[in-house]
Length: 86
Image (cartoon, rainbow, N blue to C red; front, side, top):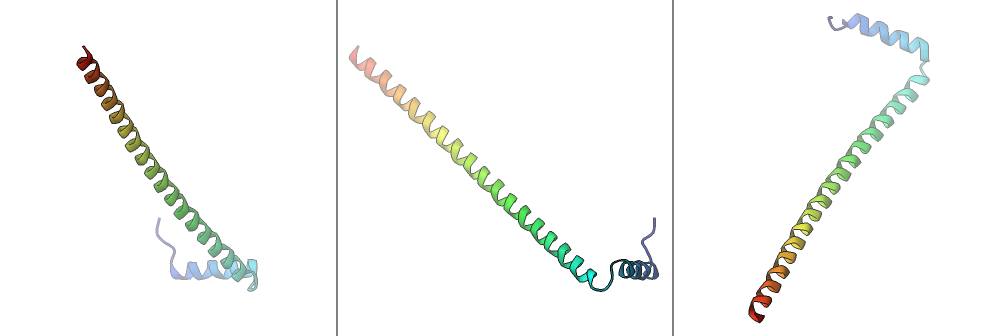
């Protein structure tokens, strides 16, 4: 399928102008522009939220590692204490 030629694009624009009128087209363009702006804003916010969730996950994993290390250290200290008592 070949792309539309210049005269076909002009014909489409004339038909759109006839259907919607000169006053309605700027309103449609404004609505389309604000829709695109809102979409981009939502995508950006979603990316920021995803990053925050990843950071929270990493912090949670680090916390679990520290907790595991502390538990192992406590267990080792108890074992050493029991050996010294015996």
